Amino acid sequence: MNWHLHFLGVGTAQAVELGSSAVVLERDGKPVLLIDCGPETLDRYLTAYGSLPTALFITHTHMDHVAGLERLFFKLWFNDELRGRTRLFVHAGLMPWLQQRVADYPGVLAEGGVNFWEAFRLLPCTRGFWLEGQWFDTFATRHHMPGTSYGLALAGSFAYTGDTRPIPEVLARYASAGELIAHDCGLIGNPSHTGADDIEREYPQAVRSRLLLYHYGSVADGVALAARGYRVAGVNERVVLAEPAALRADAG
Image (cartoon, rainbow, N blue to C red):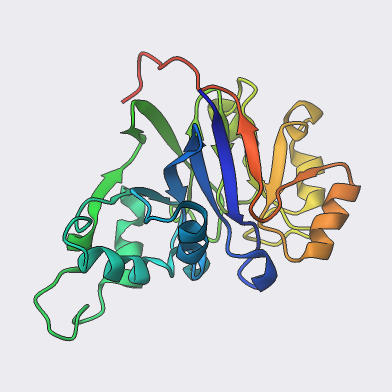
């Protein structure tokens, strides 16, 4: 069985040419899970797979990660076969923010009579969730303010941080078995995002060697990060993953 991460976009909200950061977990060439849905993510997904996502995880509710949900709502709602079938996994702590950001506008349809979440199969979670026989761990990250951003890990295979400052203690728990670590990193950090200097200060070499950096500010920044010896994800790149580990006794 072959597993990949397919990076649909790798940029910050300002890096239009790099696309909003979003990734698809693939198994044997087929999409399993889309992580985040920014303004143009749905177009990139449709180009890659020719169909709408059947499962989606949201890391946090900044618009470059959720703005595509409204368009996805319309595509699902007006298709009787798809309506209510796309599984949307959201950490329970994000639900108030997500509701306010995308679902609480009065009258989702001009005709009325429709609730936004009826188009989806909404699945709030806390520790994690099951999908296609695999247990996915969720973990809190350090972005903007506490309790507003969460990453995702598949034991033995990968961890995806979403937007974050360095989280060495978290990765020691969720990515301690050689997993690939897809990590937010720009050339220069700020109070909500990791920079190259932060990586070098906070993570030992054993962790840095497993990092795959994304969410950077420009093509030039990506080149500069690579020149510092880091592996940098590119737009539309597919990255080979290790086979997920056997399920833990405490999973689920």
